[in-house]
Length: 296
Image (cartoon, rainbow, N blue to C red):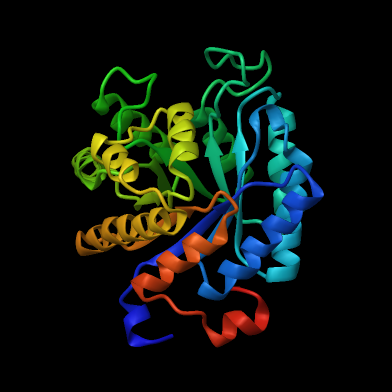
């Protein structure tokens, strides 16, 4: 690793489990493309009610065995009993997974609000406490630099994150955002509340602006007006890609200048744009990562 890379933040990448054989090829291409950047860890998402449970498990196993990466498994409270949820965690442990991204989870499509399973966890705090009871896991959680739709205020978001940290979380990964001021304001509020764990910014490279705005609407993340204007002015696909790279580089460099020590990238299983952006920041494939398929 070069001196330049040593000064850069550590990285992590998020993947989602495949739904089809073509999706499996796309996932594996994503892993092969990004593993040489030696991420600290990668994570694999988990559908509402365990709808991707087996696919998530299979993806984790393949990434660990073939790429030898440190993998974090997502886990939600949606649509399952406590025991079913904890059995998924135990299954992760049997695969050698030592980090879990513990989330309450969004309600299934068509349901307006989260309703706990009668025998399930009512909140991410309850899930974190149970995982801590099992022991052996590093627990990461979600955080919201913009107000969560169900929160009454930004302070409610900070207070809820504090409860998750007090329950046993050691890392918070934010929802993606496009205005760094939102993240920095949230980070300062977390520090003021006594939250001492790292608050990691989540970054979403924009592969396709229209698809991203639909995705952001589902996540209730804000897309600033200036971004709508900027993408409206580019017609060619190559120009849109150049804009996406430039915007991500500007955002990430500004975050690094503010002392951010880790960057979490939502790849959407589209590795080339993420790789290009990382390369623009100064990350380079390492010989060790290339030889073994990733970071141990």
